[in-house]
Amino acid sequence: MSDDVYIVGAYEHPTREAPDKSTMQLHAEVSKGALADAGLSKDDVDGYLTAGMPEYEHGFAPLIMADYMGLDLSYADSTDYGGSSYVSHVGHATSAIRDGKCDVALVTLAGRPRSRSQSTGTGVRKLRTFQDSFERIYGATNVPTYAMAARRHMHEFGTTSEQLAEIRVAASHHAQYNEHALYRDPVTVEDVVNSRMIADPLHLLDCCVITDGGGAFVAVSEDVYEELDRDGVRVMGHGETPSHHDAGRIDLTRTGAEQSGQRAFAEAGVTPDDVDYASIYDSFTITVLEAIEDLGFCEKGEGGEFVEGGTLRAPDGALPFNTDGGGLSSNHPSNRGGMTKVLEAVRQLRGEANPEVQVDADVALVHGTGGDIGTRHGAATTVLGRVDR
Amino acid sequence: MTDTWEPRPVPEVNPETEAFWRAASDGEFLLSACDDCGLVFHYPRSLCPDCFSEDVDWQQAAGTGTIYSYSVSESVSGWPEDGLPLVIAYVELDEGPRVMTNVQDVDPDDVEVGLAVEARFVPTEEENVAVPVFVPAE
Image (cartoon, rainbow over all chains, first blue to last red; front, side, top):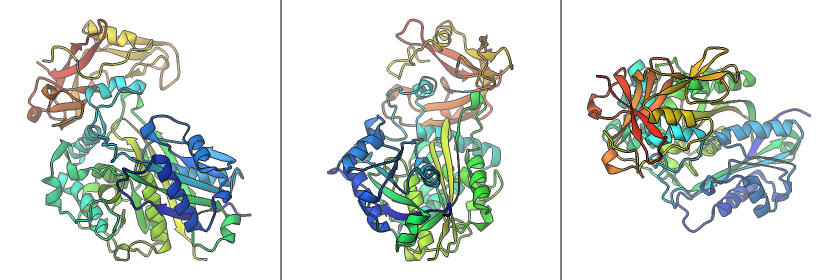
């Protein structure tokens, strides 16, 4: 038996606003969709992973959902470090399958922040963590803290708002071909830099969307994969790290992608040059820029120049990224966009992306940045490979 | 200058941080210093985050530093109107640690990376709790 693990089911909920559904219902609907895509049934599932139901602000999500969906499990995982969680789950599911803890791992995301009018990123919510008393009391929510990262990057390397805008421009170019994208109109650099300032230097169009919805994927052992008809993608490598304030030595221009990327590339036996398509977490434009540098697609500080001139645009750019429109233009369900990053990479490797943005891809990179690069964040990188049956 | 911190979120005091907030109410910014490895750090913790020593003492900071980075928000949901625009910054203290804070008593257009700043302490309705903020150095 080989140690190979495959993602074989993938499903993104078409909704972007779901006032009439419960979060549990969305988890179940995407589960059904991903299992159907794989050619599996609910009874085949023996592993379940989810970053939970953050809107309810409590844990126990695998218990709640195993109960709701009637799952019979030998493995469960509720890792949540924000948006990168679902990229982590690829690695965790792979390890669990290799360890023989389960053979069919279902991974689900669902949430309804849009219907609940959650002011993600700018709302001063109640203090929850120890660190909140030293950060959130100052109004430090995600937009102003990511904006500090952008400011420092600009200060050290001369990065401009126009260069950051290129990232949104590329995402919006891709979103026009995605019938489910929240925003389908292509935008220009001028549109981005002239949009309302949210937290200087980040504009409205530097920020991701807030959407309801969800997605799911199914990872399986080689034995299970061989019984199925559907094309899958192979998990080639994975790495992750929580990165943090480091006792006051935080460097706002660097992220945990430096470590997670290196680990994933080493395990996969590939380099950034081998990557044909990249799903890169895009909570904000600066999130993408720093990840591109830290993953090694260019030198630190040169990300601004790198993204100019359509580098990120599919199908012809040197590094086509987020061809579904990403979190910036299409979907960021439950504020945990790592799921949709995985799903679009699977589509690309299977040749099922929207035709206008389909890349001839053998190797795809998925990178998640969760939490807050201005304070502490999860970084997770996965390398996926095309498999031809 | 803001007279009191309310209605902004007031820090939650725990046994590890009580001395920090009490010192702030006396006009002092306390850092943590490890007696074993020498690390000076923020926010306060009982165990050194470098060497895990429990021999951690308080060290009074000079209360001066420079702006490492900052952002300016015109609107923050749940934040009082008279506190806007809000400047959130990391100040790099002269002792080393980069600490999150607000920069006040300054036109946001005049804030820049590298600006020299000094600490002020805004009282809260809790007698022994004040919040450190920074203003341009005199």
